[in-house]
Structures are given as C-alpha cells and as structure tokens.
Image (cartoon, rainbow over all chains, first blue to last red; front, side, top):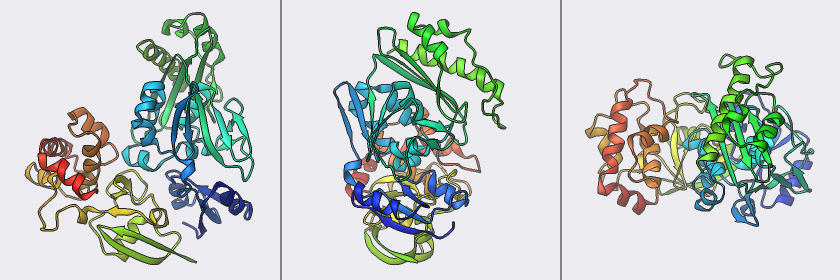
Length: 267
Length: 166
C-alpha cells in the first residue's frame, strides 16, 4: 500500500470539505473493495476520508412505498432486516448473496453503488427498481447513473447519502456467481410494478449495469419466463474473461432472467 | 505520518500511534503479539484472519486499524473463559477433529461463533453456505461442519456468546 493521509469525518459536510481539499482523496465506506485495491496498489489515494463515524448515514426506513437505505448501511443489516424481508424480499436476498459473511459485515450499500464495479450486485437492484440515489448535492435517477466501469454520474466531491428503492408488486434477483470471488458472472434483477411496468437490469455482463428493453416489453405483455425464452442479447461488447466468454454471458442473461421471473411468480 | 488509534482487544484497552496503512491484522499480530489470528492469503479470500469487531466477524486483513478506533475487538485468544476453559465452538472442533493442520481454525471458529449467534440451530446446508468465506486447504470441511453442528447443540454455546458480548 502506498502512504496516504487519513481523516475521519464527523458529518457529511465535513467529509465534503475534506474531500474538496485534495483532488486525489477518496471516500472510505466499508473498504471491502478499496482497501483490497490499495493493498494491490491498484488504487493509491493521497487521502482517505472515512465515513464510518457519521451515524446519520446508517439506517433503514420502509414507508411511502419505498425502502430507503442510508449509504453506510451494511449488507448484513439489509439481509437481516425483517422490514425489508417483508416489503422487498428481493433486496434482502440480494444483500445476503454479496461476498461472504465477513464482507457483508463491513461492505456498504453506498460504497457499492458509488464504486460501480461492473460485477457488483447493488447496481442491478438500483436499475431494476428505478432507485433514486440521493447525494449531498441532489438526486440522481438510476437510469443514467451507472455510466461505465467504475464510472458514475457523481461529480468529484459528491457523496452518496442514501438510496431510495421503490417497492414493486414483485421482484427477484437471480445471480450466476463466480464461486471464488462471489461476484456476479451474470446477475439479473427483474421487477414487476403492475400495469405492464416491468424492469429488467443486468449486472456482470458488460462494463456496467444495463436494462434489457426487449425483455421488459415482452414481460409487460405477459409476465412469464417463457415469454422471454427466445430473447437473446447480442454478445458483441460483453465482458469476456477466463470464467465466461461473451457468448456464454449473453446466454446466461436469458437463463438468469427466466429464473428471476420464475422466482417472482412464487412470491 | 501516523495516526492514533484506541480500541479494546479481548477486553483490554490498547492505544498506539500507527502508520495509516496499518491493517488490523498487522496491529494484532505485530504490535500486540496476538499471533493466533493468521494471515492465509492477504487478499481477502481465505478468512484465516477473521476476528470480531463489535461482535461481528470481519477479515482483519481487509480492515485498517484506524477503522476500528473506539471498537471492541475479540480475537481467537479472547474467546476461552477467564479460567481457560475452551469456548464451546473450540471444544467442538477439538472433540470432532475439526482441524487438520490448524491454520484455518482460528478463522473458522470466529466465523462459526458469528454464525451461531445469528442462526443458533443451522442446518448442514446453512453451515456450509455461511462458512463460505473460510477456506481449509486441507479440505477438512466434513469435520468442520460436524464441529459447528455439534457446537450448535451445546447449550453452553449461546450462553457464552451472549455473556461475553463477543
């Protein structure tokens, strides 16, 4: 790890000030991606601004037909929340499937979203549910927020404070995970809001999360897994690595989308 | 540059000036000499470095010492009772041969305690799923699962965990 300066912010305003003082400063949430990247010298921030002591950034609120997560809410808290398991079980299940037990005890919702790892799970829930990402400067709709690998619509110095997930009639997340890293090789989040409003979001397959409008259109006509069985997304431009080539990932998108729709039907 | 950290480890207060880069596991092993917490992979894969921070299992190789400032940390050295009697999970690993070379054992035990606190009576499938962040390179999983299952039926297990707030 390269040397860095460390400061612990007491408030979001203080964090914003500390961040603005140094263009190479980074925010530290749970650190489950950032600390690992720093150890491998893939990241070398000059300063870390730790959000861990800002209590108002933690918490879960269910109401107004939405689930709101404070940015520093840990994955385990979401996975074990009785309120979320009742109101939006797909979100609790998604959080329960991130990394492993120890990662879930540290990793945060806001950290995952702000990092925009192409294989992360939370971005699929954001886009699949049409979430609103609230920051210290305003609000972002999930559509348009995740721009590319590790790139979001956040401006330099902008801090995610909470995320608002609308509650659909039914939703499910189906993930084909890499058994070693537990990241999604392909993960598909499907949400049915009723009245033909269906959203399908895919993570792990491309440089960032994306929607499959052809599947959304088919499912809005008839919400059944065989309605999308023949829809294949093009393999061109999809991720390819030693675990799965682009053609296989394209195939998995349809398979995981069908599984998610089937899971919805059982709710 | 250095920064001051203060926290509790196994019930004792510790304060030191550390390099900002100091990982929790480095502090535990090199500053405090608590070498029961092992470094297996250093890349957050193997779970041998698992300790409890405010009662929750974390990988101490992926947490900076400064991140636990003000917290209560418990390591494998801190789970036996004051008289030296083994924690029920340690006892179960001993009785059911839940270790071969023993390198992964501290992490397995700390993860298993966290699991049993949330799911006091886990099924075999739940034990396997929930311990997936801990690797045993001897592949001694069958007896590890057996040990955790045995510990879950030991009435002393829940009591000890609750009493120590660990």
